[in-house]
Length: 442
Picture 1: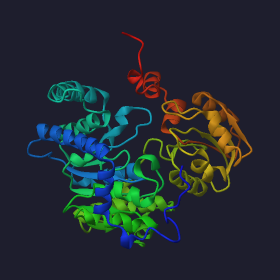
Picture 2: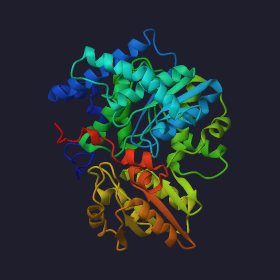
Picture 3: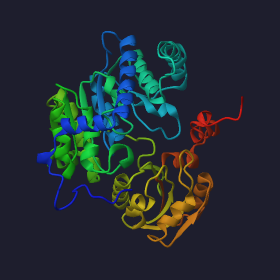
Picture 4: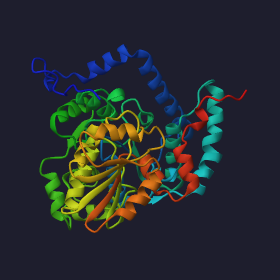
């Protein structure tokens, strides 16, 4: 991970007054013309597919959401809060145990049979026709997921649908959709190799989902907020932000104290809904919003928590929530990590409050547990390695003493391998992409 700071240098700081989003995006696309052209071609392919199925436009009112953290939570808050207006649906990611977790209708996970039906009768035939029109091309995993969601929304007469970006925003296939609103939760440290090492670069990517003439909502704060606002305004959007007092107003109607990041997410969702339905009570809205998400501060038992936090900002928020929920308990961790993330930077907030750490594997694109442990040992003196996540979980559960809490975090893939009771899905999730590996078959 880069050690360069978002404030550049004292001599040449990143001054928002000199930030010109349209010109910077233009330069980026000129300097990386092949990359930009390929990304835009994928968006054009997606637009072609949407026009094929819905030449008069999709009947669902769509909300496009991105951000470093909280976008999955805000998506579910929006669906819960909007349910009074009719059917709601969401397409989010990643899934933890089951691909079907990506699709929700009125708060319920879509059934396997319906996914099979839509794929076999609609998506797969279109894929074949698409490949005939565009030799050498095929719809991607994400593009097929978007089309699945849109067809599920239509089949169930969904009034409001929320579509979540995986990473970034400006160059993702969701840009092909005609949406009623865009939402950016926040901009923090994530994906520096693909989104840029500085906050203003990530703001250009994420706030780039803004659409001309459509409201753009954000809970971004701090040094990145002006970059977000200027980027969205450059796209012709009206920017509506969470104000300083909004989280306090949310806390005032909740039955118990909640961490600050959750209050901001709830405030953002309420801001979106009240824009379209003015005058709705915050108390009623939040009552409909607060419900469980898979592996988001998921209490498997009173003393066991699983959370899919996987970057430094999310881990810091998890640490805040743990201290709030368990102010006097000792913490034992099971952690895994994927891709090229800096283990020490990611886990440092938890290492400060943990008594014992077990490092394990994360299956798909997972880092070596031994490499992670070596990186963490300068920060913590009680670290061990257990290669198999299920074995690590079994061992740590048996070791738990009174006054101790076990926390699994760092990777959705690790949590899946530790907890998924379906051996078929567990294997399929762990071996994602195996058919794309080089083969020795003729």
